[in-house]
Figure (cartoon, rainbow, N blue to C red):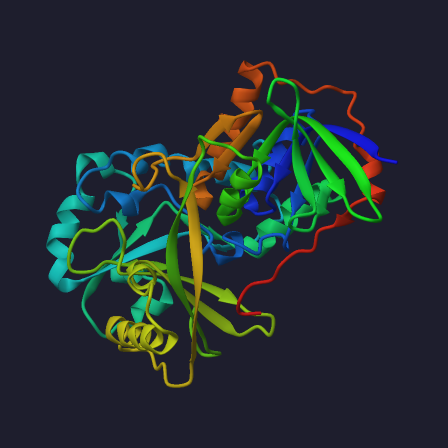
Length: 399
């Protein structure tokens, strides 16, 4: 006998984007559940550096437009949530650094100073005097200039756990390939069916959201959708472990204005309390296709050159590959905003950047309201708690 359940919204993908959407929808009265085929946060979420930024680094090619304008309000939006004053109460989420910094060497100082002093950036960037430098840069043995940005860094583990705990009863583990999408007479997807030897049941919903990062393309294929397409931007991320490393949160600017800083560093602690430097930026992009030995050599050389006052002899270097998933909407160019595409009752969604997650939720909830998708109040989802297993939470690579 096949059992039948219903809910308003089914979300696929248990990263920050899917969990944020689950919290927003349930807070607005929708019945919603989330399905994950792996551990929660195991994809892009825990590979993120956790930087909540306002797009300034995207203005380094000379114009504050496009991406930078779209996300300029995001730090304030996130800070409101962290203070418990916005749509999701994030009080209790750990903030690793209240500020983010940008470091340029002396040879690039004049051009960068002129650019950052432009009218369009007035009030957003502060050049610091050496007396105001964080301890790490006070010890610098090379000339440079340090700027303070309105950005900050959250602990993605803390954020992940907080979003999960708020909706724990409605987050479930499912096996890849254990379900199929069912269409009605009009060709719209209206249900998913599970059919294994011990469990046969269907879940009906008003709408389905695919927010599974890299997994979106497989879901698109499984649902036989024609319009949405995903694209991947690979990275070769590096992390460095050492008990004597100081905490650092900085973009290091290279020899020319670029969309990507040559090095972006955030600092974390592993499960044993050892300091971890996590390296992104151009080093991660240019490292794609390199073997581990070559990538780690490049990273060590870059750090030694950038911070000659730090001894890296007693540190461990590691790297791993990760794919950033985005909407393919403009001939493989990088999207400038969070994005979703709807087809056959399914919204395929990509936040594009962690910092744009609230914007993605705004877009989807506004779309639901404008298209008449309202909380039903009659969903039969309670029984799923005994039918599907709870999803587990992933841990960081360095743990």
